[in-house]
Length: 284
Image 1 (cartoon, rainbow, N blue to C red):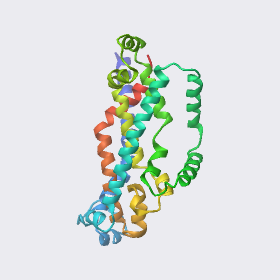
Image 2: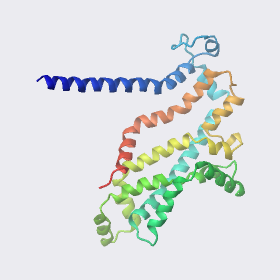
Image 3: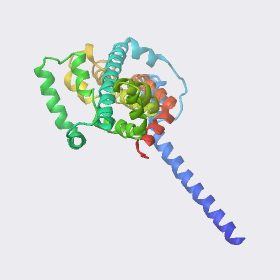
Image 4: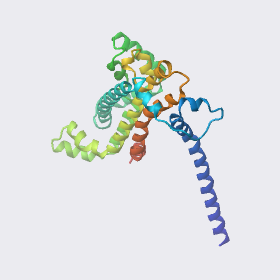
């Protein structure tokens, strides 16, 4: 009886310590978001008057959010990012679905060698890829164009691998039965494989949307025309030529507006993201 009480006490103590550490870590992770939102509601004068930072707003204002859309072309940056995100995600989805289907279901000479070569591309540093992409896009006269932004991001070896692993979990009997019934490969892919692997497909789409929305290095490198700036690059432009380096509250308001769509997207689809990733990591 005493041993059972000691074991129960040990388990409860372990849970308490675990949750306490997770709570502390959660506060550390969420504090920058809290400070960003808090600062966005402070006026420029009150923020600069704080010799010791205050963790509350005595006189909240929405002027910073108004300035974010009136003093700088933030709506234009949103529109550019929306076009870039939708086009890139749609083209990439078409490419990776067809590639994953080919590697998982079709039989052709050298398939394993080609797939191994694909996986080896993940070992190449992104900096080298950016350099070659920059030279290619420049030679094609696609700088300061949406195609120049989109084309280098329309495929992903990791997403092909993730989707291929999901496709391979579908029994071969379904594919053989469909072929006996005269079903084409594209119809089988659309009617059978994609519905079964929908959680992973949704996960890939969400992750790609987040990746496109946060894209910074490549858009900054390939565009110097403000008409093609994305929200991530627009932040730097806002800092340099918009509010100025000193107007931190206005900058925080712009960052809140830019971050809000991704936060909402993640909160809505977080369960699908986790289920899709876990599904791709299991076999059998």
